[in-house]
Length: 443
Image 1 (cartoon, rainbow, N blue to C red):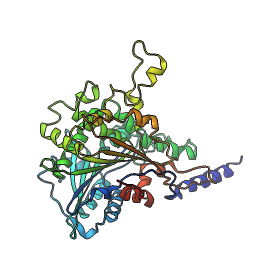
Image 2 (image 1 turned 180 degrees about the vertical axis):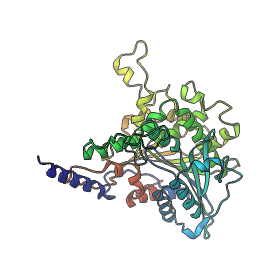
Image 3 (image 1 turned 45 degrees about the horizontal axis):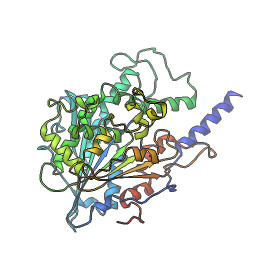
Image 4 (image 1 turned 90 degrees about the horizontal axis):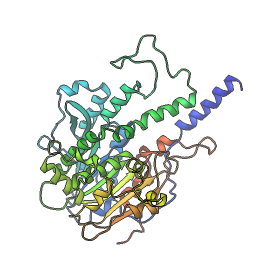
C-alpha cells in the first residue's frame, strides 16, 4: 500500500476519534433513587463528594466545575445561591502562597485561581512537604426553602502523575518524546521515541500511559499513603459538613473508576481494620487521629448513595485474590472471590456500617464501549452484598449501562477515552439519571 494512502487512512481514523461526541441513547436501566431523593423536607442538607479516579484528572479541570454546576442546577439551585465558605479553621493545609506553591506549574496555578474566582474554597492534601492532591468546596444555599448543597471535590493523583512522568520519562501530554534528564528536561539531541511509532499506536500508547499507571501505583507500596491521604481528605470534608456535631448529614459519593475502590478501601479500613495488610498502616495512631476516625465513621454511617462512573470493582478485585487453601478443590477456590472474607475494602465497609440509619444504594454507571470498566454481575452482587440486621442495613446494587459516545469509523469504533468516566460529565442523560434516578422508582 502506498505511504500516502496509509497516511490518509490514519488521518480518517484519527478524525473519527476526535469528532466523537457525547451520546445519550440509554441501553439499560433499573429503578433507583437520584440525588434529589435526599431533599424530602425543607431545610435539609446534602453533601456530595466527587472523588477523582485514574488517569489525567487534575484538580481544577473546567469540565468538573461545569459538571457540578449542572448537578446543582438540576437540583434546583442557581449560581446566585453560591455561598462563600471559609475553610481556614477546618483545613489542615489551607492553600496559601507557601513553599509548595512554588512547585506548582503555571497551569496548576491558573486552574486553582479560577476555582477560587468561582467561590470554591481550596485545601491542599500533603504527604510530608509534597502536595499530592486537593479538596475543593462549593456551597449552595437556597433562599426559598433553606436547603443546602455542599459540593466537594477530592483529587489525589498529583503525586502519581509526577511519578509516572518522571519514571516513564513522559512529557506533559503523556507521550514518550525526547529523552529527558534527571530534572525532567529534554536532552539535547536526545532520541525521539515517538518518531518510529505508527500513528494510531501513538494514540494507543498515550492512552495506556495516561491511565494504567495509577492502579499499578495504588496497588503497590504507595497505596498506603494514598489511603492515608484520602482518609485525611474525607475526614476534613466530614468535619466541614458538620460531621463532628450531633445530627444526620446525608452523604452521596460520586466516584470515577479507581476512586470507588479507594473510597471503599479507606472507609473500610477506618471502620474495621481486620487482619489485612492494607489496613494496618492506616489505623496506626500516628497516621490518623481519633477525631478523624470519628468523622469518617459518621460519614460512612450517613452515606446513602454511591454513584460509580466507569465501575472497576470486579477488575480491581483481582488484586485481592489468594491461593487455594488446604483441601479446597478448584471450584471451591474460585467461588471464594470476589469479596472474599479475608479481603479488605468494600466488604469491611459494608459489614461494619453498624450505625447506618438508611439502606445504601450503589449505582454503577458503565459505557459498553469503555475498555476499563465492568458490569456488576448477579454473582458479584450476591457475593458482595452483606445483609445482616444486627450489623448493617441492606445494600442495593443497580447497573446503568448508557453510552457516552457514538460509534464512528463506519460503526467499527467508539472512543474509549470519552466512553470512560469523563464522558458521564457531559452526557445530559447520565446527569439526569444521577439527579432524578429512575422516574418509575417507588418507595
